[in-house]
Length: 432
Image 1 (cartoon, rainbow, N blue to C red):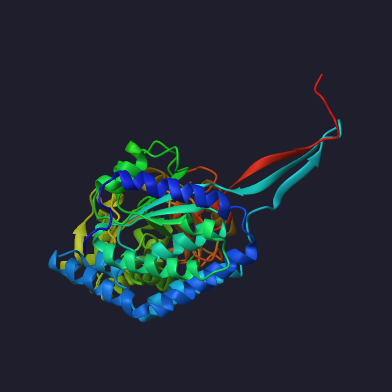
Image 2: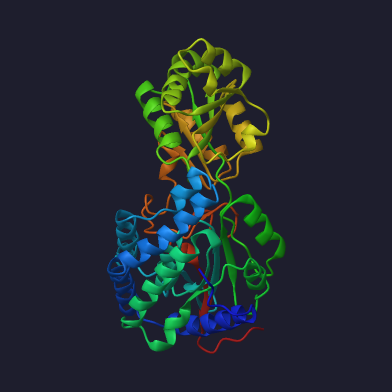
């Protein structure tokens, strides 16, 4: 599909318009923003046929290029998926407006009143790869939080992203937002890779960049961006099982965390079993995973257990150090037996991407140790890593999962798209 962007200088023009509109959007009333979100949701549903037709163009191109199943899964849309995108926008209308409230207020001894007021970040650049739902999620979250947004999707989803964006703009045009706010949602209408480089140099217009995609994209953005970057890094997520874990929890959580949707970032990629959990759980859970077609990359001890079980040898591989650093995004799993919880945490410290880690246990002390000592943006006890998602955690849609320790760490919803400014009210005080 051809681009409507004739030259890269237009990227700066788009950014300039978004910045101007964002200043107006930051002043809009909650009711007007919510009306725009509702109209955007309705437009997605109304334009379902056009969006699905565009998505078919992208899917056919992906199949011709031989892209892997996980990529195609993230790219594919359906009537149900479009309905979910619309529902996510509608849910944002029911969430509190994060802009304008005060986080803290206090009075100094000299009578100065000091407060920290929530404000938008400004203009957010979103650079993402294969998921068209990011177009609507990011637009909705930024609009509700009073931010301008510049959307730059990957070339493999270009037709889908353009169709979604077209519907969203139709909804905004019908809303109660002032006309001056309409350009706050911008779209880089080109497949040219150079447009990303151009965006990363526009720090006079763009306040923060959020990249969502593979390691190559993240590294490129981090290297070239002239503005702050909030990384949505790869998801090397760990599931730890100890000897106290209930068998039914182990089976349900392990299968769900690995096989529910293996091509997304919150699927588990490494299973760690403590020494006291080997006899109770390892053979059984490996057998169940293999029954779901999971390829098992095993340490020496877990390999010995697997070979004594009824598992096809074609699914068994010796694990290398590189395997523990791999985000498979497929029906594949690294497995390692560790001495105890201390050793499991040490493994996570070495190999984790700081996305999501989960422990299955019935020991309160182990739960507390895991929560206190694991350095990741989301830490779970007795739950599937698949819940590491803004919608599942009550944030509405999410713009990404920050693996960067900035003001936001973990799933980023509305509040995470705001900052605070100090407001000081005096009565003639001067400093002496």
